[in-house]
Image 1 (spheres, rainbow, N blue to C red):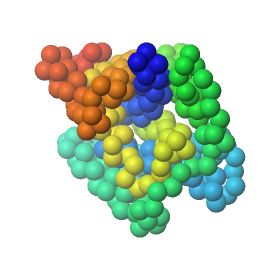
Image 2 (image 1 turned 30 degrees about the vertical axis):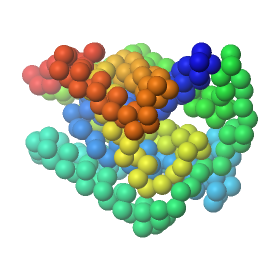
Image 3 (image 1 turned 180 degrees about the horizontal axis):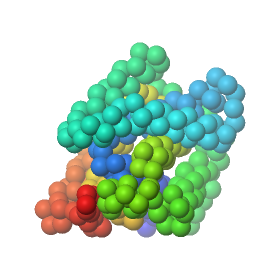
Length: 294
């Protein structure tokens, strides 16, 4: 029994790495642009397909393919922000407009990738899937260890950028008070674009990592984006720290519950946690009501 629990904890930490990478992109985009991006799961799917094509069609090694997925996803995020989101922000459109636009984008991407690639299940070839290590009685493939290591490095890098760099200071200032940031000369449009690029790149990397463990298909982003929204809401909308803690926490709760409950109940656990948090602390554990205008 103790080995089973240990195995579930290891699985939960790996799953939490994925939840956190995807949720961090959502958190950044909402915290700075105040855009609820319902197409974020398709950024994840987009990155998985880019990595798959880079490995299977171009013959690239797996790790460089992940880097390509990050870069291409970032460019895609830039185009989405520039062509779809920025016009709405400039016109002062109500928040529901961005919701409708991103939902439409999500539907368009799922349909387009379904038309181009069909519904066949694919897997990204990775040399790390066949290598298994033992950790105190638990089994861990090198691919899962890679997921964890990459996630920790990216989380640390993002935290350092936000806290210590000039760009990070501009992002924090924009998130706190966009009008004051504009008055003091912060290039708001540039901050918006970079934020969307970072969010898309994180999701694309997560897709490329998961695509080697499970499958790549056009609807793969639908479930992960739901979990990412739960993480963002529980941790506190706009809170990077909250997303990290809630991402790993939710994954651990789900995997441990999976050892005790039927598989059909696992998703209910996450929604139950979210409902309790919304009823007791509507802003999430680390959320605050930020002032956005002067």
